[in-house]
Amino acid sequence: MEKQFLLNAFEKGEAWRLFKIIGEFVEGVETLHDLGPAVSIFGSARVKPDDPVYKKAEKIAALFAKNGFAVITGGGGGIMEAANKGAAEAGGVSAGLNIVLPFEQKPNPYSNIRLEFKYFFIRKVMFIKYAMAYIIMPGGFGTLDELFEAVTLVQTRRIKPFPVILVGSEYWSGLIEWIKSRLMKEGRISQEDFDILYVLDEPEDIVKTVKKTVIL
Image (tube, rainbow, N blue to C red; front, side, top):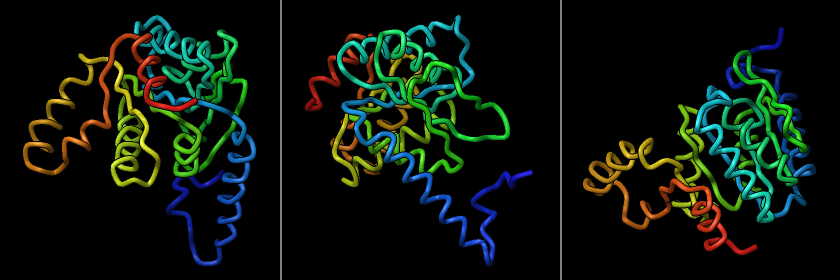
């Protein structure tokens, strides 16, 4: 059985694993380099198809596809499945970047471009490199990880500025208030940093905001 804790698995004499890492980078770049304008959509893998958030993700992805954007997701279930489904059924490019996990994550059937990764950090580079916006649906730790990594990279000018959109003002209100009352109030971030984030509810407004803030 393959080792589960991959980063802890590096031991003396195992530098050959670096070639596997390079291979994942090469495959990702070769597959996605001509993807065109794209957005990455994130959210909980545990959302079911009858959940209104699933339906909203599906609609958002379909609208992006109809407006000439490819849709990139983590390739799994829940919100990822919804977004891949919406993009594919609208006739768009639907990319699923799946991660190999010992539980929970299984590839959904709706992506028409598929990649599989063992290493989270390589997969995250692909989400960033080929996206013109991040669409953050309600989710858990993994979603928050993607959110704050993107914001940090924009803040520190490691990547070109792009909109990071939190979908669902009610869901994200507690986090936004905490950022304002703690981080901003105590001088941990600036107003400019805070302005990286958008909080929107309607699918049409989300697409309009992205089209206004990026150059196709």
